[in-house]
Image 1 (cartoon, rainbow, N blue to C red):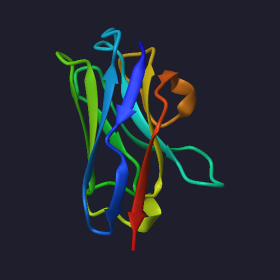
Image 2 (spheres, rainbow, N blue to C red):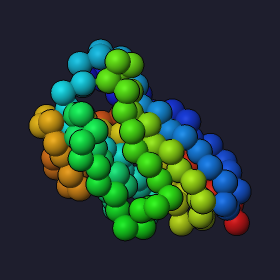
Image 3 (tube, one colour):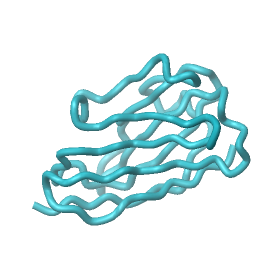
Image 4 (cartoon, helix red, strand yellow):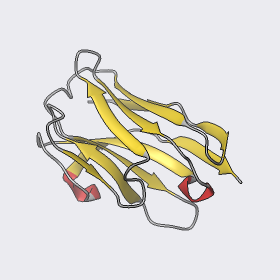
Amino acid sequence: VQLQASGGGLVQAGGSLRLSCADSRRTSSNNGMGWFRQAPGKEREFVAALSWNSGNKYYADSVKGRFTISRDNAKSAVYLQMNSLQPEDTAVYYCAAALRAVAGRLPGEYRYWGQGTQVTVSS
């Protein structure tokens, strides 16, 4: 597994962005996948996760109803659609792949990490 996140940028409050995470080795179709974020001076926090077949999805309370995680195993890609963005969503966003088919909220469940993509939301 080798992950590359993209799609970050600068957006006004209320706007939308779609993050993508591609596995260049195309070996993650059986892995649970997740998105985390880290704001300056804060610890990395869970955003969303889904199982290998998208049957299980989990969201942080702070993004529930605004963000949607999805995957396309044929493309070895995971996406994070972010709507109604707020300044508090500003962070570097990381995608991650777990060793297990189903993974949850804990960073320790994830074995592989992408390099991160910056999301900045202006007020």
